[in-house]
Length: 321
Ligand code: FES
Ligand SMILES: [Fe+2]
Image 1 (cartoon, rainbow, N blue to C red):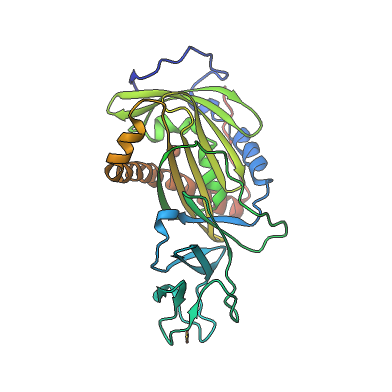
Image 2 (cartoon, helix red, strand yellow):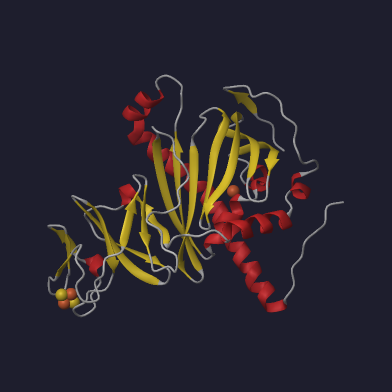
């Protein structure tokens, strides 16, 4: 466990509920059980496509659940439909937006909020940070399951794809024990202070620069099968969140869309992000992306192990002493 120097709020000492080295605390059976609880929850048919800022008046293609969809924005919000022109099948993502419609690049058929042949726009939910689309589901809901967010915040969103399942992305977050070892540039010490069937609260030292770190208490909770949310409940930035969403691209691939939602009661925070936001946001997105380059390797490894286990029907778990 590497040394860090702490700054910011000093948290009252609390005992760790688990003892021993991180590898013996990181119990794969608890992770698998907690993952199973998250996977039993409903989605309501909703999947995150991307961050709100990424959807503009330039049509963009997203593959979700094995199908290509085109998303674009007009003056009234986001429109989503299948990325296949109902006339002769051109990709609408190669078209342009005019007057609330995507205009097909081949023969200029304009498609908007109205159904036209096989063009049947999806229900869209733009929550101000993320854009969700609703795909056919036996139990559809009016809106996605989203954890409560702070009233005022500054957000940054990143999106990456990998060869894994959305559940591998959630499983990665249900293993906080890997933080200090797999991302030594970002995390120092870790202590588990509370754990239930499906959520976990940790005290973690988060490196800001070099050995300088802030200590926070953070709770991981999953509001729906493809999302896991870390909320800071003690220390600097209480109420800030990191929402991590896995979106199924196809049977073997997933996108991770992660929103960092920062808030603070410190005077000047909101003024600072208002004026410096255009520099802060790319830095936040780059930092989240750096972590996810590593965490997607973790998620992809789970997929590789699953492939191998499917082949030989074998699964290894080393028991702690
Ligand atoms: S293929 Fe789109 S208008 Fe013909
Ligand atoms: Fe990680």
